[in-house]
Image 1 (cartoon, rainbow, N blue to C red):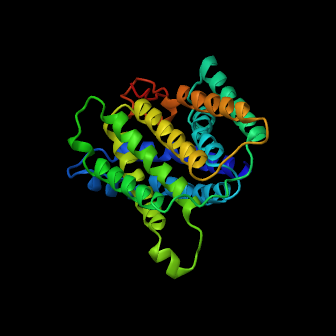
Image 2 (image 1 turned 45 degrees about the vertical axis):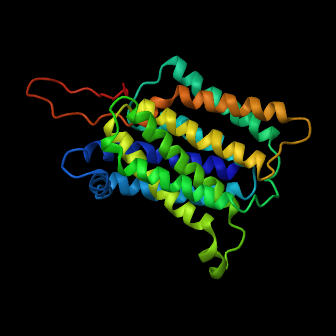
Image 3 (image 1 turned 30 degrees about the vertical axis):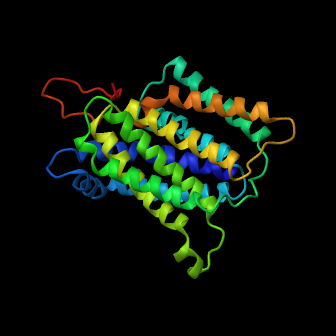
Length: 289
């Protein structure tokens, strides 16, 4: 769980930087690919990507030692990290209920830490890698067509797509058994991992810029936790410690519920606009409404 929490810290901090960059890149023509290219030219987005890369290394280490459901819940807790970072560094005020949600996330993770066993020892059915690759292709199509989606439900769909993409990465890491070059080239899970991660970033960038980020982040949390957790339990043999399945389920639900309560922190506070002469400038934030 230590590596999973390390990944959450990296991802949670990166979220603030990437959201600010995505909103700043919103002006200009072109489609979703053009939006992404404008975003990656900003230092905030690049710094966020660097943190995401470090977080991914922690995530891989975690997926090799604990069940997917525990890693997924820990990654969802990155919203609690984002909330704390926003409160400390960006001067965003958290209400009492939001601090309570942070405590709820921590309680859920503590329960998961006590109840989770070791990772499953099954390799999964042969078709599972191809299924993950198909999901990754679907996420890519959703991300590329983000601007064509109907405005109502767009943010949720893009957020879910990003969540499914990151979920593909979680499952694919578990499906890759050999690091020999000849095996990697022939393994569909490798292509699912690469395509799923890239497609998830594309969908997330579009979601952060085009709609309610609170809604998109809620979709992201749901997509990257529930599906991969079920795959891990049903096909990869993830289990809990003897007699503690109820505590693992409770901890998972509590952790995800706390993360959803903090969904607005998937969006960074808006940078203050230049103050007019004679008018003092205070801090501001977007609520994702």
